[in-house]
Amino acid sequence: MPECEYCGDEFEDEKDLHLHWGDEHEEELNSHDQEKVKKAERKVEEQKEKELQKKKRYAGYGLGVALVLILVGFVGAQVMQNTGTSGPKTSFDLEGQPMIGEADAPVTVVEFGDYSCPHCARFEFGAFQKLKKNFIEDGDVKFYFVNFAFLGPESTKASVASECVYRQDSSQFWKYHESIFENQKDGFDTDSLVQIARDNTEGLDYEELRTCIDNRESIGDVRSDRQLGQSKGVSSTPTVYVDGRKVNNWQYSNLAQQINKALEE
Ligand code: CA
Image 1 (tube, protein in one colour):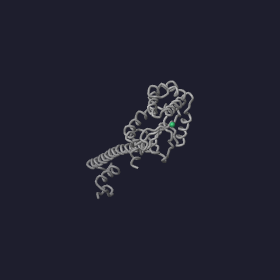
Image 2 (cartoon, rainbow, N blue to C red; image 1 turned 135 degrees about the horizontal axis):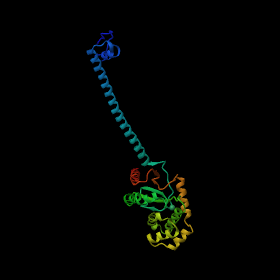
Image 3 (cartoon, rainbow, N blue to C red; image 1 turned 90 degrees about the vertical axis):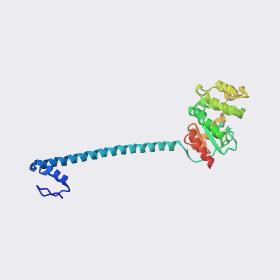
Image 4 (cartoon, rainbow, N blue to C red; image 1 turned 30 degrees about the vertical axis):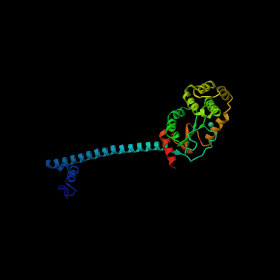
């Protein structure tokens, strides 16, 4: 161990000894020893600088990692929230509801929808068309539409009209249903709802349809549809169930995933 020749103290190494000289014996040092002190001080400075750079690097790295973890957590949470199903499995009494697909299809999909709801229109022309092509036409899924008319008098009127068409000729329902969504942006009144039927269905008695709409002959069905939804906790549209399980996201990819899962059960 180097020993201080001025006071006799011992030090770990030369550098510490020289630093001690600078602290305690500055006035006694010859120029040669002063050089040694400066060199030791420079070394300490360099080391400090290196440590600092290292810390900065790690801090940067740590921050990067933290950000990635936050992002992964966030996206993960989003994915968790936006896929799958939620709530307990429920069963519906779907007697008297329009259905498309094979009666013995193994999986049942139910949509609660409102004819004035833009998301329902998006569902109709997006996910539903793909479902039709990939699952309904193949006999894997039967699909029911239930009115959840909650956006005002025009919604209710369109629902009444759709139920009137269903009563007159259930085979014309789905074409009419789609056409109502196609004309959503223009709003609905009796004239427009009858006209949509004239333009898009075949063989109906259109005067009878007008009377049915004007007299709200099917309002009971529209009300009981909504009650069915409310009894299951439906509060927005579209709300979609796959085999009695409410999906967290009605995008096609999630629906297809849930249907495939149900097909395996
Ligand atoms: Ca209905």
